[in-house]
Amino acid sequence: MNATTAETLLRDLVSIASPSCHEAEASAFLVDWMRAHDYDRAYVDEVGNAVGFIGDGPREIALLGHIDTFAGFPPVRPDGRLLYGRGAVDAKGPLCAFAVAARQAAVPGDARVVVIGAVEEEAATSRGARHALARFQPDFCVIGEPSHWDRITLGYKGRLLLDWRWEGGLSHSAGDAPSPAERALEYWAAVKAQSDEHNRGIDSIFARLDASLRDINTWQEGVNGVAEMTIGLRLPPAISPESLAQELPPANGAAMTARGAEYAYTGDRNSELSRLFRRAIRAAGGVPRFVYKTGTSDMNVVGPRWNCPILAYGPGDSALDHTPDEHIDLDEYLRAIDVLSAVLESL
Image (spheres, rainbow, N blue to C red):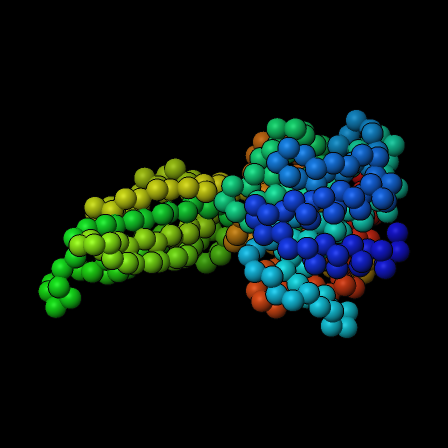
């Protein structure tokens, strides 16, 4: 498949806005593209995932990307060999690389490649991956996330989200009683102190417990004041969402709900899949490196259940995820397609 076809697919898909829960147009477009480019079968499934198949052998290779994006839709524009737009990196670049590589590769006769453009990865639901989880049992799985063309992502931290809400009678601002905003900030400070204490003496970023204040709002309802906030916690492999929830500081009269729980997950760096990626990267002139990410991905969802060789791969700089200047180098995108094609042929 020529470079122009690959680049046009990416530009066209990035040009379709598809924030989480609004992916229908993008999924339909990708399925139409797969059908037009001789996939054996392609459809939009019950939850909105775009799914396509190459081959019909007994060994299944899942290329699981996501078609939804972070919110916002900055202008889609080319700048030389760079393509700017929401999703160019996270993660329509990797997903389009999957779609092109599966069609370009000479897939072995005993294999079947399934390309999945999953919905709601950027939401805490991971609805698309959870739907795929029950319908496929692959022998190998590649997650579509940006890591640069010459890097292999082996693991992701876990996650826990806390929704905290306090409501109570207001008092005069000249008095001693803390305001709703102060109550919220006091609790955030307690969670941050707990996280800092856990991290004392830990140098590895992947082993640290990361706390972030995601949202905070206060307002007045009649004689009552209300404060709400969301705290995000990124969990290392040594901490489970359940154990962390039990150890959180007391809410002190506030209502608190934990959601979005995911366990940290790491794949085997010496698996057959890892070896083939390293070989393909070297053959393309690169020096392969392993990375571990501080965020989460659909690897956290499917890795423990599918229990097969798994890693994440895809073109793009993840430091550009969710930013107004998100963009991808088209030459890197094409190199990643060649690496993926070589791996699929080797499998």
